[in-house]
Each structure stands twice: as structure tokens, then as C-alpha cells.
Length: 180
Image (cartoon, rainbow, N blue to C red; front, side, top):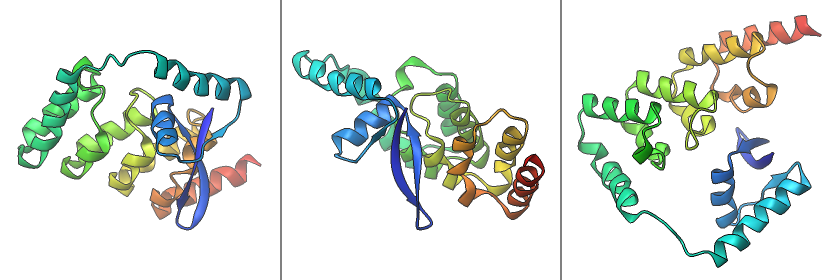
């Protein structure tokens, strides 16, 4: 597991990173924490292998994603919703799109759908911590429900405390107290 330390409300927390996010963080010279030495060795070796291999980027696809992001401020709600639906259905040409750039332009329901998919780990570019600030507090109740039902790990929930509403925090508190 690859972790990165971030600050939320003045407190340091560690969040799990996907390999792609870890790669970006490493290239930005951000400190990473590896829970497995073998995984760290493999991760570091991937950079050595990458230096030797010529890059096989698809400029056409990259160019397409760049154009879409530039058009976002001028798209209507229906078109943006269609784009989100394509991302949610894992359409090949959209896997590399930067979701964080899109969030300010999305409707509440689309943000909620992306967040749910991110929590399920269903997309390589969806990071729940990036999306959480845009999700309505009341829509985050399902996270507490999933945790109480045992479908969500404690580490997945920990980083979301600042975004939960008071009622959900109370429900979580009661669950933890009753569990002990």
C-alpha cells in the first residue's frame, strides 16, 4: 500500500494512493510512505524501466482530453452530464481525464455519482478525497451506512470526517461506542 500524508483541518492524515497518483506524487517530489518493502522496490524499478523504454503516449487521446477540459466552462448541464455518464461507464478515451478540473462545473447528482464510484474503487482517476469537498453533506450519509454495514474500511472513512454532517458523526460515534 502506498500512502501520502495530507493535512485536513490542521491534522496530519495518511491517505491511500493509487499507483498512478503515487507516480504523480513521486514525480512532484512529494514524500510517500510504503507499507511493503517489495512494493517500494517494484515502484522504484518501474521508473528505471520507464527511462529505458521510449514513451508510447497517444497524443491524439491526450489532445482530446485537453480539449474537453478547456470546453467545460462553456458546456451546458446536459452535455456535462453526458460526459460524466461516459466517465462512469469507463469509456476508454476518457480514462485519463482529470476529474478534479471538472468538479466545479458538475451538478450535485453527477458529483454524488462520481464520489460513489470513487468509494467503490471503480475508476483509476477517481480519488474520494478530491471529490469529497464538492459532495453535499447529506449525500455523504451513505458512507457512514456502508461503514456501519461493514462494507467500508476504517481507513477509507477516516479521511472523510471533516465532510460529514453532525448527524452522521453522531451515528458513527454511537456505532463505535456500541461496537466496543
